[in-house]
Image (cartoon, rainbow, N blue to C red; front, top):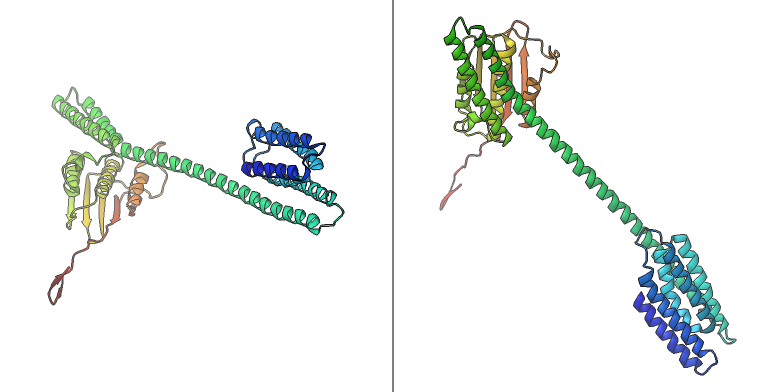
Length: 394
């Protein structure tokens, strides 16, 4: 636009000099052309145009007014200056509000038509009356349409950016909640259960400290072993690693070791394996082991049972784990009896749900409890060999 303005000012000045050379006001007109051009170009640096979608400031409006005033005076003296209205016309439509820009375009058009008719030298020219309004109408319609499209695009971009910010915040909150859930579940299944066992062992050691020192020392050793194991578990889940029992063994041996470890004077835990589990995903093994740990912790702390059984059943499309005891049982769905308790079963359900599985609890007062979890497995694709005439295709 600036290049077009300079070109039109130069062409208008040349046209004036060709047609009006030697007239009395020629030097004044040339001076006005120079002032007009310098004022326009300096204003581009001293009064920059407002950004798209923002209102112009007072400095910019003053510059527009000064340029228009000089142009009006120049138009009264030199009709060739009418061509310079085009850059002013587009500048106003581009930077001013729609209503102001349309009014400015109408005034510029009327001034151009008046100048053309004034210097027609007695001959009526239809183009002088009709061409400027037609060009101005088309230009105004196009530029207003583009401004409205730009405004809609800015609104869509702002909405998109706002949606992206909201989505990012939602994802951060979801990540925080997921990590909080992971930590709470891991702490409940490892540290909390270990601390509970240590508490019971230390209380037992205190009761027999004087009467049976050997038993007391045995309880202390067991408590120390549990503390060491809990410390190892804490370090592993902080680093988001598999349970320590799965570090060097698969699920079935880990469950058998868990059953041996949980067995004691008051509770006997046995492990049964039905089928061949084969290689399982690490997350499935870790979740089932944690569920077994949580279920046995509930048995030891709440059930008052003397026997419990871990049963791992392996099928082609799923693997299931049952933890049964002969304890006192409870009413399924009843609220927890003490404040702050009752996290174990929801944590087990959450682990099963993360694997796409289900967890069910069957219990009646005085009839014991069975906790069952079933996790679907992806079917194993077995290559099939198809004989053909010249070989075998797998």
